[in-house]
Figure 1 (cartoon, helix red, strand yellow):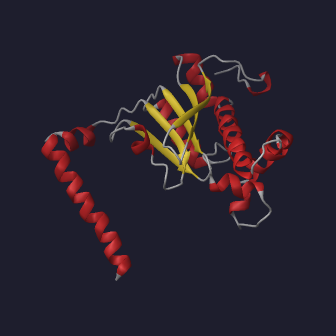
Figure 2 (cartoon, rainbow, N blue to C red):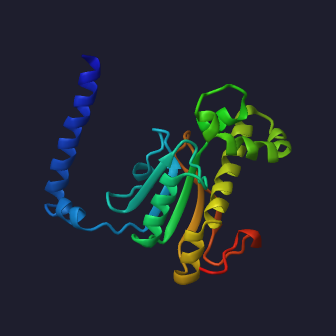
Length: 213
C-alpha cells in the first residue's frame, strides 16, 4: 500500500503542476507541443540528486537531456550518439554540457575492486582513466578528495571524447558550433564548477581529426 501511495503522490503532483502552469500561462503547453528549440544539450549522471532543470533553473523546452551512470561519452554507446546527432543536426544546439558531480557513486565504484556485474563493463573506461592518472589522484590527502579529483578528470575526458566525434567536428567546421562545457556539480552546496571548455575549431590530436567532413 505504501508503494501505491508513493507513486500516486507523483501523479497528483503532476496534475497540480500542470494546473499551475496553465494558470500562469494558458498557452504554455500548446507552445511546447508544437516546437522544441533548446539551446543546450546536457549529458549528465543518472544520479537522482542532480536534476538538470532544477540545478540550472531551466524550463521545459530549454534543455535537451541525456543521462547515464557517471556521465560517460563512450564511442560504442548508440543511445548517447543518437542523442548527440539529433541535438546537433536537428535541434541545432549551441552548447553541449557534460556535468558530473562530486561524490559520484559510479566514479567511486571504478576506484575499488568490488564486482558489480554488467556495471563493471560500463565503468571500465573510468578504471582506465584512474590507472592513467593514478599518481596524481593518489597524491590527494583524503579518499573524498581522490574521488573528486577523478570526477573532474572524468568530465574532462568526456569533453575530449565529444571533440573526437565526427558529429561535433562537422558542426565545428560548418556551423562554428557547439561550444563544449565540462562542469561538476557540488552535492554539498548546489554550486556548479567549470572544469574545462572547448570552442569550435579548438585543436585536438591530429590522429582523431577527420579531413573529409
